[in-house]
Image 1 (cartoon, rainbow, N blue to C red):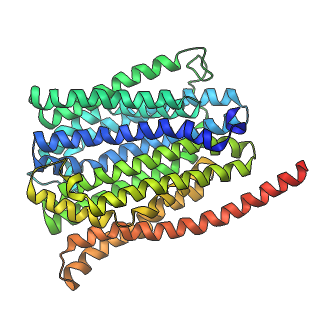
Image 2 (image 1 turned 60 degrees about the horizontal axis):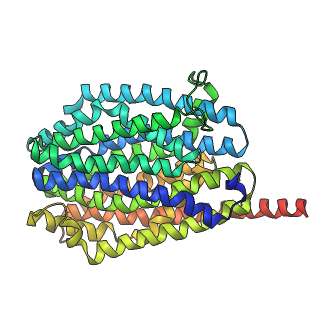
Image 3 (image 1 turned 90 degrees about the horizontal axis):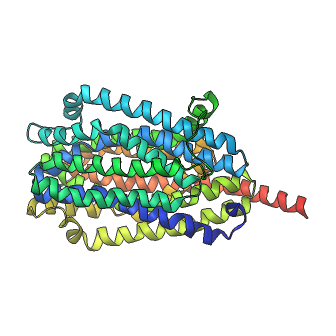
Length: 457
């Protein structure tokens, strides 16, 4: 009930702060692996880890298809007081994650080496990538279940518990990483084992919460049979982040191949470091978005359009502040940030150059990310999908295909600069598209709000 009556600023703080803490912890979770691998195994191991990013994006695509779609659907059904359907969504999330998690893990394990070579691996780096991904894929079903149930917890009014689950994984992973990498001498495989064990422990805690019959949404008999309408609705809403992650998979493949061709294996490692640092700020914005999602979804379902617009405005302000902080770090303190991951001077030099370019348009990407998530939060899947793909497919992919050649042939810089420059250019163009789409939609909401006010008056 508070989602429809409490002050928007208070609600956004209440829901976003735990999500921000959780997502920051989640990004630190990835950074910790990279830092320990960089210092404990070596610079080429960071390149090997970077080669796994497309596969991790692909796994995340299937995870977000279920998790994000279910979270939005639950928020909207709770806003409509349809508690029975919300309960069935929980059961369907469990079954879908079980099926997809096991299937994805087995299929990718069967073809792991050809996949990694396709992603840009060489004889010097494939061993590291294979060691890491074999363990991660064996635990893939755990990852899917953990992320899916975390989304449900957040959407059903438990943002703090969702945050605690994420923090549990980060703390345990940070403790186990040095023990497994340095103490047991397991190298990059040790980092993967630490990741999966941390998620198993968090998943057990989630099951305990959702098994409590006092909770509004909890595990009970009769909710696990897959319902055609529920599955269809989950997939329709979750298709936007699914396609975004799927596109990200192909994009990272193009980036890795371009950087390997023009700069070699170490250049892929530089991208791995820059990607982790960019991911840190992106994850904070995702946390702000997750705080907005249940508020926007509930009030849209309740037709309180003035509240929907208010939460959108506040979310955009917060996201822009976060990405501007990223811009300041990337442009003025890149060496300090990169130095956390490696002491190799050549890798540091390559990473600093790449970071300055990639972070150039950071102040505006918070707006684009919020706009995309907003359409998804109110169930406008088609618009969210278009915005998700505009940056990746309409702008970034052509840039990655043509700019490296243009830089290599027609400028004094080599083709790797074309790869790096494609990223901020696509950020700018996608933000322009998002601005016009969102402006058009907000005009409609203002008209609806005025119509509702006239009826009440």
